[in-house]
Image 1: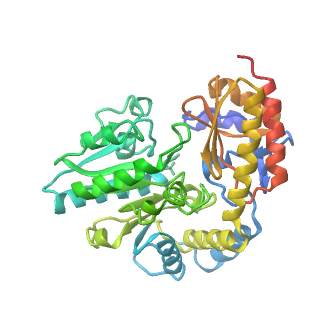
Image 2 (image 1 turned 90 degrees about the vertical axis):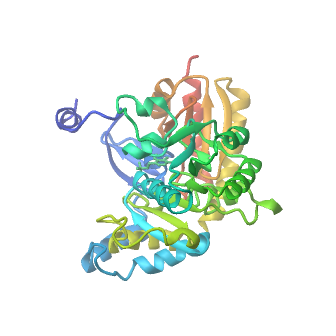
Length: 402
Ligand SMILES: Cc1ncc(COP(=O)(O)O)c(C=O)c1O
């Protein structure tokens, strides 16, 4: 046991299974305290969108703190407005609320549903969410999460949430009633095992929620912010679908890749509903800080300047092609699914069995449900690095006995 792990054992609440100590990173690589290099396709669970120590982000962290790190929402700052404008332009006319995490962004969506139900649906407050989903670790977001293991020990949960199977429009139709204020889904379920929703489901969901007068809320914390090769996963899923061109949810939560490692969350809501929030009805200390929004601005500029959306699409083809080829030779691989920089490798064994083999092979991935490991590479990943990750994947697969 090293001094680092000993201090964790003694002083840090034991809520996560940790593997080893990381000391530095550069690009897609990280190094542990033994000097071993690892290819990081877990990216701190879909966070390090520009990889590690990206020069543009390092520059932002070197300069913005010397001007202004924080000032609270009692004042304007020069960075938040231009970034909000860019985010709105990427979605549709609306407003942005800046927060600090995915759970906090989702709390905003849940509070929106309550305000909407009270103002427009006679006090209805139920949210229909889906099984196998993940929405965060606060009390409201664990209640929204459709996984019993996340609820365990924290009951009683909040009233007003029901769960139906994901991508099942019949079940959703049956669950929506006069008591419903909103529907909440991930465009691609992430923690659940990388399950994209189908185009027909999204389109029908939009139609029935509009018809019923309930909000459609999308948790894009993991699958949003270009992760799937479009700004939003629904744009990717409905790409080329003429009937899907005007698909738009009523509100969208964002986090993870938007901050590249700096803790940021945000939600967008359409202009039609922005008036439900008023001064004093919702707020947060750090959201929209000069430093946080400078970080988002740098990431957006870099993605645009370096053509990273196209890169995500190109590397998806390399990665999925390579994993499918491995699937044809290694029966332990049960499925390859996903979009863009969010690809799931479903195995015949649990992550507890497979992950150590990937670590030995020098590849970091993120475990998920349904015996799936997530490949969440940084948007800067090169073809050669995908090739190396595939070589390391094969090495790991060779070592799995099942
Ligand atoms: C889809 C989704 N929503 C919400 C969250 C919670 O985000 P955070 O951990 O930043 O609170 C996560 C985190 O994994 C997520 O994947």
